[in-house]
Image 1: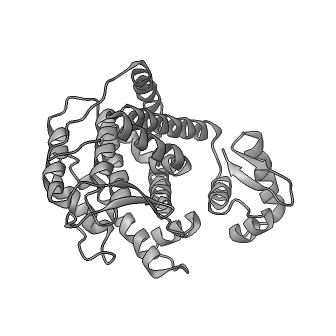
Image 2: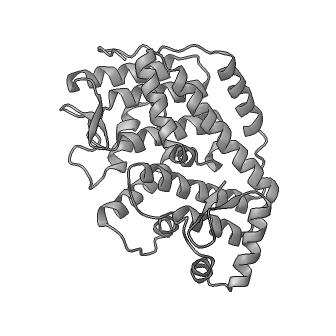
Length: 321
């Protein structure tokens, strides 16, 4: 993709994109949570999973289980910097309701919060060259730093003036932001936060849905779709990827609401997501219940097609479906 001093989004709405948008609109309105306690609980769970997944993409090793403990102000053992990243992310996600997705100053404020105590230039665009590496190999060189302020200004101008569906705006913003790579660090976690802000603006039910988790589960497809857009010169591949991610996330929350998971079953799923090799004995210890209770809940989760065993009992692992 060629960038000069202005972002000029290139994409076209084809049949697949239209179909995905229609499916998402139908599904998001099926999410009905009337009980206030359950709403509060689900918002908390979504935030915990969003923070854990977004930071795990950045190779933060704090488990989902310990991420929730940090949310609850409980002590955990871990690297000081990684714990700080989690604390910062929770503070940033708690600010979402007070942020304007069209406001560049709010955007810089969110970056300042996410990177507090972690970078010297948090809240400011970079003043040096940057590139994207994978396995110690540079796969993308970002635009010159002198262009970053005008590029970001034009990207926010797109949000201010666009008549596109907010789902499309979220995808377009995400792709071009990644291409500009405007900060020294924290680019990925900030753009995922901003996409959540756009989705919440589109429909309040998105506050129950950790989109970041689905991106985390599909990282290879995520990077491939971005690369395809660089080659094709338009955002279509990435729009389709993100809409698929949103659609899949909605399928999961609708299914979970139908099945009505117990608190124990939710905890089991979270522990498996933190460590796919975890044993039922270890889960019983974590939850302070007997192994029979764990086995009974495992049976229910397997029957409802929510988890499955991959490989043998001895050397295999559990997978959350």
